[in-house]
Length: 297
Ligand code: GLU
Ligand code: ZN
Image (tube, rainbow, N blue to C red; front, top):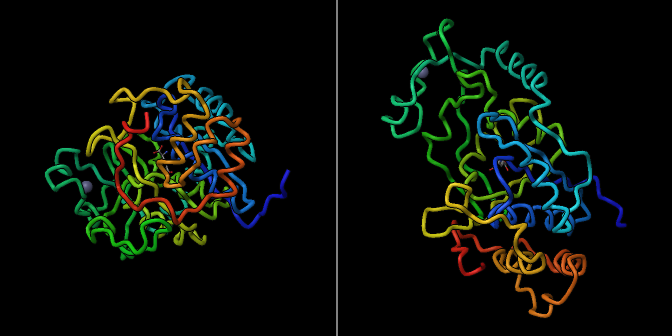
């Protein structure tokens, strides 16, 4: 058993809205190998905050699948649904600093704006009615350096959007809880799907606002069935637990640009993973937004 280096902590943060499919295996495996190749810790966090979207039993199904693939985690699994009090404390802290404001603009108005909010309610001091709570973004830097994609600039309107951290239905938003948990789990590097790349500057900024040093970020290509269609429950991606284990791992390594030799097919899961840890190079991951996954199935 290697000694874990406390210097590195990575994580995989699935939303338990269905079983793991090939696309989520990519994020799990990429973050795992990046951690293990540096003797780091690898954590699993259940992002089960959006209760209407959660599917009963999906969390244990995901954990069983990770175990089947040999991806063992190094600390107790954190469930966001059990941390509401903590999120409320952070919310109160931000509110005391006048960093939040209430907004009752409807979805239609925001979609007419092209999906990015125009900070309309920022000075209106709304207190009554059913409000969503937005964080004042004040000058978030729109640039960052991605470990896979290199120097990135996100649209200024997006970087400066006052985004929702508590929804009208009272649920805390992903944007808040992901940052709180990355800080409190002492995550040093986030490796995840490229669909979240544009959220990175705001997450780094919130991290700074909460007095913590942001982790480094690296994004992985998305598995799509055709351009623009990422694998998901909605397009009936098959559960990866139904694939032969070594074959799925082998294909995931290829997807991540790692050139596994064909003999790996004959190895056990542990042997295959140990090859993968030794040979893992983040620099080989193609900086591509999408890769057609049908050739890997
Ligand atoms: N829970 C998010 C998802 O499943 C991932 C969040 C993250 O990695 O920052 O898409
Ligand atoms: Zn508003």
